[in-house]
Image (cartoon, rainbow, N blue to C red):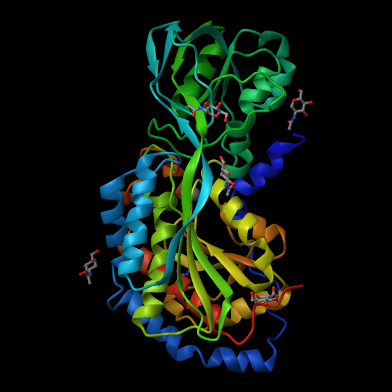
Amino acid sequence: MAGLFPSLLLLLVPLSLTALAEASPSSTHDKFLPDKIARELAGYQDVVEQIVDYAVNGPGQNQSYDRLATFTDAFGSRLSGTQNLENSIDYMLEYLRKDGLDNVHGEDVNVTRWLRNQESARLVEPRDYVIAISSLGSSVGTPEEGILAYAIVVRSFDELVTRMDEVTGKIVVFNQDYEGYPKSAIYRVASASRAAEFGAVATLIRSVAPFSIHSVHTGIQFYNESLPKIPTACITIEDAEMLYRMEQRGTRLRIQLIMGAENLNMTRSRNTVAEITGSVYPEQVVVVSGHIDSWDVGQGAMDDGGGVFISWQALTTVRALGLKPKRTLRLVLWTDEEAGGVGSQQYYDAHKTEAGNYSVLLESDEGVFTPYGMEFTGSGAAMMVMEGIGKLLPEFLNSSVIYAGGGGTDVGWWRASGVPTGSIANHNEHYFYFHHSDGDTMTVLDPHQMDLCSAVWTAFAYVLADMDDLLPRD
Ligand SMILES: *[C@@H]1O[C@H](CO)[C@@H](O)[C@H](O)[C@H]1NC(C)=O
Ligand SMILES: *[C@@H]1O[C@H](CO)[C@@H](O)[C@H](O)[C@H]1NC(C)=O
Ligand SMILES: *[C@@H]1O[C@H](CO)[C@@H](O)[C@H](O)[C@H]1NC(C)=O
Ligand SMILES: *[C@@H]1O[C@H](CO)[C@@H](O)[C@H](O)[C@H]1NC(C)=O
Ligand SMILES: *[C@@H]1O[C@H](CO)[C@@H](O)[C@H](O)[C@H]1NC(C)=O
Ligand SMILES: *[C@@H]1O[C@H](CO)[C@@H](O)[C@H](O)[C@H]1NC(C)=O
Ligand SMILES: [Zn+2]
């Protein structure tokens, strides 16, 4: 696809999830760290051990999980544009201050405001059957009485084009195979406009997930502004396959779709910031981050409560151990990530003139399951520093390997402008079982696994914030 969609998608998809299947260690093992840096890193061995002990066996044990459970049980899901999200941000500001952190504040941004409202779908021909749906973010609604139309089922955009003469006035159901998140998410993101181009009245997309117990998985979609905006929702894998089988047998499908979704004016939200101010170079920054907003389904525990709470845990741990990093260790909780990184883009716009003072931005937004290293985008020289830090970690954390391709949606603008970015490699093989669905709850997470992530996250963040120099760039 030309134009807007591919670049937006790139920003939406964590690089490392793209790379999960083919993740390969960086190829810098045959090169050597400059002696000075190797000696400097060796000096952090003891403090890294203290950090790990604090996080895994000490007072930090279970802390990020318990804090997150308290938070999600209190607020539940945190959709951009809602008062509930703002209340959850107020709560974080209060507790970050209570935690003794510096410069705790919100930075105002304008965010999207989309409401799902009531939604339902029924197969009315060949038999009466309730189809579970979840409207996609930014979708328009149907007229109040709904849309009643015949449906066709396609398996790909190519098939859509081949059958374009059949599309006018129809609901187009997409039953695309799951071929990994980035590839399949294009169907969620772009199907409405692709089908509207040929006269479709609505689209229903097979949920982008590798596994399903009749679950619907929402997510953002984008309209092509030069085409009619038609309602779009996801359906379960099971229903997509059933509709496909019915059509293969020549059965005529007729569906009634009712969606109350609406897009309201942008509203105010905040990126949440807290720091341990640098003791020597306060203007220089290492960022640890996650996004506080979530979809309106599930509890936003995994996506991205986990990333938010291990990032807070990093500052808690550094402070509790009485460590005073030379440069500023800054926690940022991004708002409105789910609509495409809306809050983080405004943070970038507001702070990009300081880019020369950012050593690295770390973002955790792909799970906080058992870690097995870090993912990193930056120069070869910086990659060697990252590997040097990884080697300070004890063997049981299995984190001495740095994989190419680090960071998430919210640090994408920094990465694109050449600032190093990183994320945590973790055993998130089942991430998309739960992603953007009612299944995203605390039950998916594990306190010990979160402690292991906190240990790795804190060690990297602290050492990077305390080293003599910023990470080298190309
Ligand atoms: C939007 O649709 C028009 C008309 O089909 C097409 O020419 C254009 O490339 C599309 N834009 C994007 C960003 O896909
Ligand atoms: C942490 O949770 C585990 C169970 O998941 C429990 O056995 C352990 O005692 C807890 N540790 C603390 C410090 O509460
Ligand atoms: C948010 O929108 C208001 C007006 O609606 C504008 O004055 C302000 O500059 C915007 N803020 C950002 C960060 O874009
Ligand atoms: C939304 O914004 C438009 C343009 O600024 C304004 O005319 C309209 O009154 C606003 N609607 C609401 C509900 O605030
Ligand atoms: C870092 O920040 C200081 C203080 O604002 C500024 O003087 C300096 O030029 C900045 N350095 C870079 C490399 O941007
Ligand atoms: C370490 O992580 C790698 C990469 O996922 C995995 O193959 C290996 O089994 C892990 N080792 C341990 C001891 O967990
Ligand atoms: Zn996320």
